[in-house]
Length: 181
Length: 241
Ligand code: SF4
Ligand code: SF4
Ligand code: FES
Image (cartoon, rainbow over all chains, first blue to last red; front, side, top):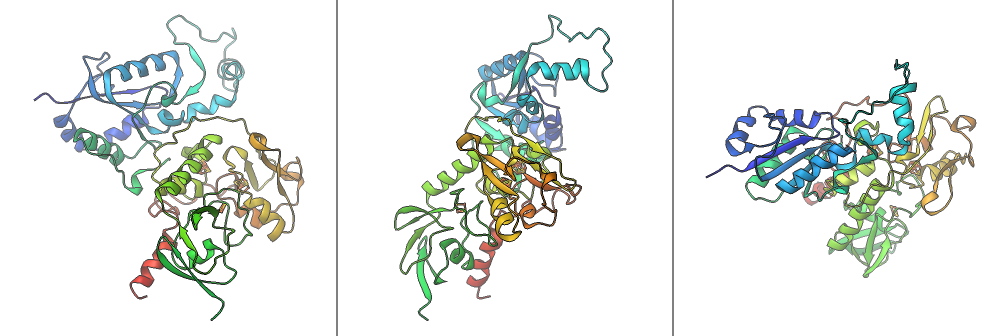
């Protein structure tokens, strides 16, 4: 029987959630017996080879590429999980949500105390994805099936969740595995 | 013994004293009713509505309703649990709660309530409101991003400190915590040892330079849900002390 496939991605995240996934330690060997990784930084596969059972999304949507990738994941994954506070509510990047975009760009590329940029130009090459007016939680862009909070979620939370879903069991996380920090 | 009153909570018989509210008598009996704006030391404000129970089938704030003989109180019905979850989720999306760097995290009553209810994420869209921060005082922060308008600081400052440093300003969506009617904290007589400063259930009023002193794993709600100390009381007495 073919193994179910899992895809993962980091949108506007810091890869901390992926690090937490690696924190399941030697259970990662069990995991690769249970599933095949498809598109994911874990195996560096860039394109979906087909449809997946589970998609793990780290990070919210800060630019148009994030939106595009998130929509791809929704198209290819039966179960989409928002992993971590950034995917759930924007997280640290969403701290800019109360600040007008122009002000953020000026601070980052012109006026910030450590900026050296005599031309005063803000990066705007064609290949750079357009930045969005604010950071969007994933659930505002596509339908999300499960949320695993935490910054990052504990490795045990990720393990319990993935194993439950692979076995078709309901996801009932114990008290100590739901944490927002 | 005419001043004892017997009633039931979720079918369990509870005996309280005359003049007690439902939440007080329930606490004494080891039954936890969720609450955010009520604390033992303060007069009830009855604003958060988390403590709503059904009294003879009518929704009532248990922090203000006095107990009565033969009252039938329902606390943990499916409907009430859903209402409470919704309230907590709304408080999260109405403010800017970045728990990952909040000094109150692990000791926060709002967060603890969400943990107790097993909320993985709010189902409502985040509002990302624009709120003001007041860092003017040398020892105290006021970060309105995290304020849930429970009014505990208002009551504590007025009734315990005798100062009236905090009050509500504005209405509806624009309601916020004011400081001596629109001043800065530094311009008031608030002191870091005031009851008002310690009364905030969330990370909206914080003492400076003491954040993150308690490591993760040893904070108030890291292992045990909020209310479990109250409930442990009932388990102890059920075992016969
Ligand atoms: S006040 Fe509580 S809920 Fe809000 S950010 Fe801080 S810990 Fe989280
Ligand atoms: S500042 Fe704290 S105590 Fe005061 S109303 Fe806001 S949440 Fe309540
Ligand atoms: S605790 Fe009763 S209304 Fe807030």
